[in-house]
Length: 419
Image 1 (cartoon, rainbow, N blue to C red):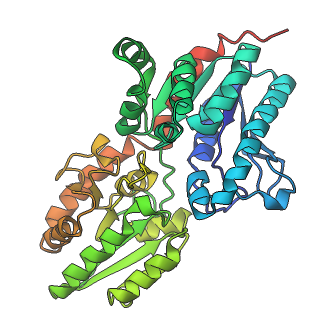
Image 2 (cartoon, helix red, strand yellow):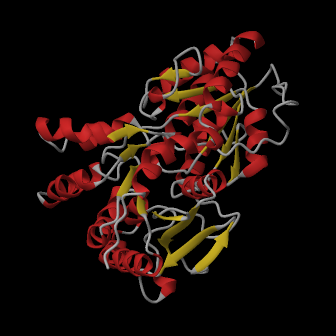
């Protein structure tokens, strides 16, 4: 018997080949792949130029317009909170996003009579879809990413009320990292916290490994022993901590160590980062590659000496959940280093599967660069090989079963639709 699942999110590729973060799409397609008896639908905000409905690999994708005219929609992509910080007037679109998320979910539920609603991000999908789920008596589950719950602390009284009112109503809640789970539970007093924790679990997103060579043929590519080759992959936003990476490079360069960085990504700070590279006299050492995806990205991963994840928690609380880029690099067998504010402590063993360093410290990161520069090939390979073993557990072909068994399968039989 076919069961229908509606996945609601606010970050999703607008078209094939889009540079948008795609873990919701990957989750949906692997869910459809491994559970063909499920009919998977995805509901996301529209963006100018994107299709309102299309089907990718048997996954039904619906996009709702949240502001008129459509060309004025500028709140959601590539990310809501950075867009608001860049242009505060975009706050005006927030009520329209909330209302239209509710209306679109309600309309789709009436058309398809879903057995489960599954929301990514508490704000806004979790809140708006919760109302629809209660109205139609449909089980509702949630995955929380990074700061989507703690950000409600910024709304006096109402923020706390919304979290305490809505969060306990979910059937199951997963968190991309342990920090987000702790922040969510801190909204509640001890008795309620003890009750709520039983339906909460840390469950990272998976990895869609697109290696340019097969696992059977893959060997770590030889790299230059004269230049320490670094790799950064991610959106160029404050929480990524790229400033500390650049300052660490300047320190190493001053010590006479040759170093090179391939910087893969784009974002609101691209111009600031270019200026900083110039000011630090690193123009010859930093190569801005722009957005790179698929096999091309994994070619960079396979040919680097060190994958660097310098993420930080910003002053306003913005932070990583658990960056998929780190899981990708580990699964591809790269030697990795990550800050202690990146979400990495949830998945790595310091010195065994990756190297940990103190966030917001260019000195600490420079020390890691020195350490790696002085490692033998065997020492680097030992950590990289352990990283690959650990990372393989997060491949979507493995992870999708944990997601399905925790967030979806136990609840689809509970659905009782309103007549």
